[in-house]
Length: 422
Image (cartoon, rainbow, N blue to C red; front, side):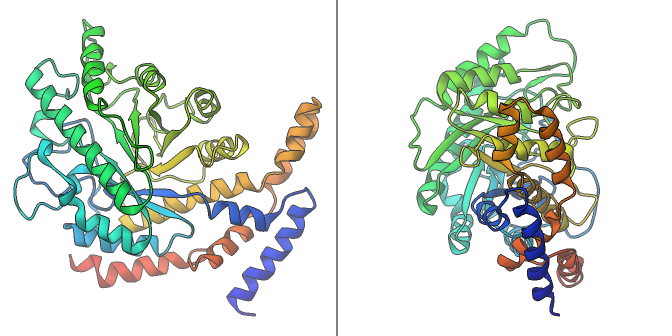
């Protein structure tokens, strides 16, 4: 029996088990194929970017750990690595790009002066692959972010610089969405905050609100651009106070009808974001999700198929939010093969979604409506033992992606032939 026949037979048997509890496994596979995942470019080069303007990653509260060989050094290398990773991941994909990944032909281009022309090669690459792109202003790794404040800085000149950069990023994102025929989600995250206890919590937030009002003054065309704002509990250098807190940005998003960004690593280590989705989506049309994994702090570990990720996927599927939640990845691990990190994190996210799609949703709702909590718990536990792995392998087969661990062999080959020579 060939591998293809084995996978198809296993899927057939798994389908019978799922059918017994009222789940159509083939339909779950089709639904998963319609959920795009946005891969983050910064995993491929440890959040380095291609500007070389003199800023450091620590200027803005970020840190990539590890020195695994073979990281991308140029846009061409990064695109080649993304090509290799995307070839090992089934389903619908997008690319999430930061502003300092533009191509500047060796010239020093100020961030407040960047334009769509600096991303023409990225747009052409995405168009050739038939994928959409998302975007982010880069308000870190820059001398004017070295003090830990950007849009909330007390110096108006520095605030004006970052406002101009964020406006430029919105225009680039709109150009991306227009060129690719798919709305580009442009996400604003800033590192602003204080390492120690502040004497004045109000003034920085007043300045941030004023800055954001200027950034978003020009109304977005939703067919090409979706604006999002991202909160954080704390960061490196902002352990005691973050200007753009959860309460601040959620309020701002609701008041201004923007997307609100939930990053699974941006809250207290014991706090999960899954429960927030149904609450927020009662008041906002869409949210942006950044899938990360914090270990004791916002450490951006590679995403794994753990309880938190399963809970997020279940909430998206149970609430019928797959078209209202934009799913992107956000981690950067320089201690392992970077392409493998993309593949592991993305496939884990897709597997979590598949597991949620394989739940007997109608039966669970019926049990809950009847207050039959015994049946609800029994069904949820039973589902955990069903062969979701066989359905996943079939999903990979349908999308010409390697099933099981075969993708790792391809990563090792690419490492020998390409990465090791950098």
